[in-house]
Length: 360
Ligand code: PHE
Image: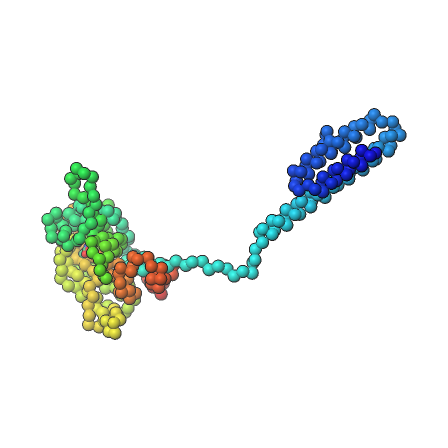
């Protein structure tokens, strides 16, 4: 029976030394597997005399059970240790205070664009769009600005490059949102009521000019739309936008090739104490250009000027933002300075509506 004692010592110490599941399985096969050492000994029982078998049988069974028991115990111990390891690794201090998420803000240009859109949407205008890289025809010719017209020089245009040998007029970075008038009328005909906010480009840079800035175009074409409708629409807009009871607008005769008659519009304001106030005082601030759409513009866009007429206007969104929110320098709008954005930015998710308040 010494052989059994040796086997027992060998396997029990092996099991206790095993460090993983694979090692245990190897030991199990070596002892209790089909060709394992204990199993082979079991097979020898058949060749023994009944007397021998009576002693050897129970001893072998006991050994088998002991090894089996040791294997189970060790397997459970290994699983416990693994769980302990995992719990240690995944430990989390739930009493730590939460980390505040960095909070972004809405840029004043986006805010004002939303405000303007909300006001005009309330008056039945939908939003139209056009490309920022625009054909020379849409940006100028169709708006009654032929190639030699002096207005072309005044626009300080950025031109796109053409491939060598391509002699067509180059595309331009649109100098105003007025080409969207043409695109909207060509796409949808008349009657039509749209606004078109977006980026425009001119070679210009100082405290109140940037080479890229934002305009919003307005266009209303119908059978009998007149200057009176233009005046009411703009007054209504200014009252809503500046959130004041009373606004005074001054329509000053002007000239744009694409409107006839044309008017620039000033708003009454005061600069008392260096602080701008809209709706009171003796100063006037220009805020937009406007007029009755020129018959040639209607024709160029495929709308019959004998049947249709209406007004258009264009105003600077950045300028509106500076006026309403007291922001002195336009260039800071596009510096991406986080301190500026935090100071002048608006809370995300507060959508401006006319009834719910534009700016709160
Ligand atoms: N497009 C003109 C500008 O950029 C503004 C304007 C638009 C004037 C529509 C009249 C009518 O200055």
